[in-house]
Length: 303
Image (cartoon, rainbow, N blue to C red):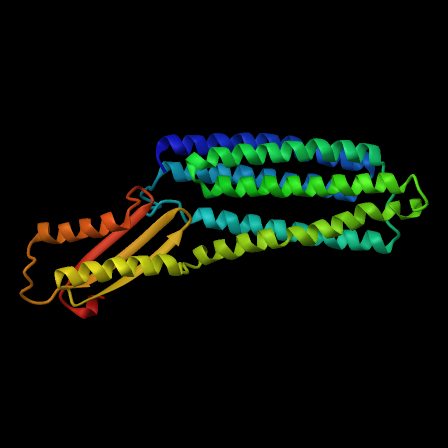
């Protein structure tokens, strides 16, 4: 990622962290004032999200530094590790909140100050969707997985508080009619439904990031690399090749070993470098995040 884009990525994540921290504190305070478990969960969720935003910011700074003598392949492997950690924390948070909601339902629900709750939910939902729109617009130019994750977090937060707003409005209306005895169940029921709906989101994040941590080669990327090598080796008369591909965060690693027969007309370093250049141009995305190795061997043992 160019230096300008790295700075833009860091700027977006830094702003997101500041706003998330304010939202988290507001959620905990309003949850305690209104007596709402779901609002407290919303605040805790935002607090966790703020911590993840700070971690993402630190990772973005590491990635902007490039490689070092100690980390000679760069810091790309940290990015999917952050996504895995973030996803697992969100999964555990959702599971814990769901158990609390079920326990509250079994105990007869909770009394709730709906006026406080409605005001909080309306304000925080607006802030969350505004931050999601800001991050998504900025990421069209940046193209960062970390910013995309941050946008996803804001959308989740906005969805949570938006649904809570509807639940609190419904509870407020119920409290004025013959079903007032059901209002204590509004808060824990909303919390239980929300946690179940949100759980698949971090599950998908963890599954995708774990495939990168475990170096599972993306099928589409492997097919693309092999198609390029099939065409290049056939055109130059190379009898065989082997290839290895991995994607780790924003880092792309491609390794190819091409078998050269005896007395092949292509001779000398310049000729082999020209073939390397063909492969590099076909792959595209030449930059600091792509590692391309092309070896020419005369013995299959080196495959």
